[in-house]
Length: 131
Image 1 (cartoon, rainbow, N blue to C red):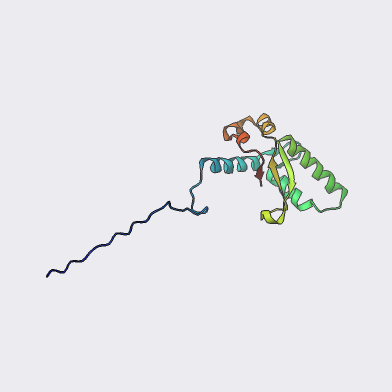
Image 2 (cartoon, rainbow, N blue to C red):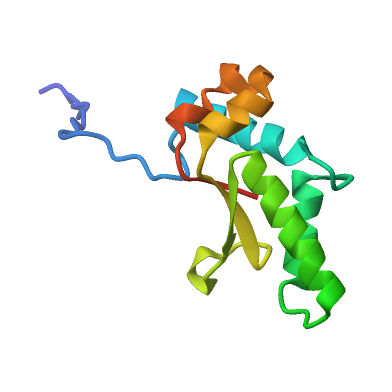
């Protein structure tokens, strides 16, 4: 009598499931992240600050009752709209760092003012959260 050992092979069926955190970044999500960073670095016309700095200033002063702060916020909002960005207040469920954010509401304005961003296809990311 010979001792034979059998090697068992486990065959797994079905499709593998990937968790969102483990999923590789798609080309679209990487492009969206690059666009977001490029927008945050842009200067806001006639304000002396970048989009990211404007967003922080808006967040810091959004609850202020000072008239000077209110006027500055309106200028920042209007100039951001010139770039195609719409100022929005964040809701707690969004879990954002700041109390506010910009939304890419008018990508055609952004491309008109900054044609160098056309390569990042802002038109394909309407209503993208910026900040």
